[in-house]
Image: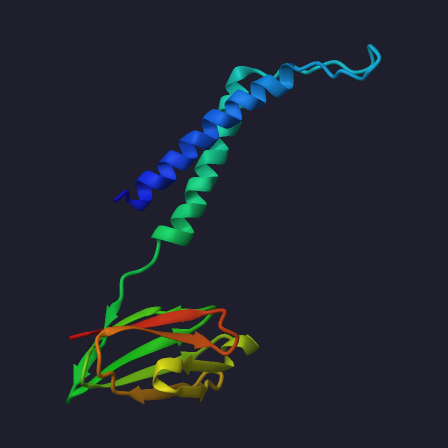
Length: 170
């Protein structure tokens, strides 16, 4: 099976080749239904400028792909104190850390500290554990649950715009 990097590379290469081929042809095609006037003349761009703009665009596309696909932070392991796995999550324009790693069968306490006044972040929902909690501004709110099965469990804001994951390992 192909990796995600190979697929994206192939699509990008194909796009560049097709774009260059059709771009050159379209710029050299005469307009058929026009009367010849000297009012408009084609402007020739230096080849170096074309290459620079293309490379700059590809760099921006690569940066965007990296940001949305590959810049995800690794999960943070919850600390186990007296049999309770505990971790503080800062709620400020999202959840930090957004991935929490815990062990199955032990009580988990996630302490949500909300710093963002955005109304979307007023609640946290853990649908797999049937938990909904209000998050007061600048206060810590503890959410406790015991995951029984290994897996990835989503937690979201009230509008499902910001997300995090509780990764339960055996």
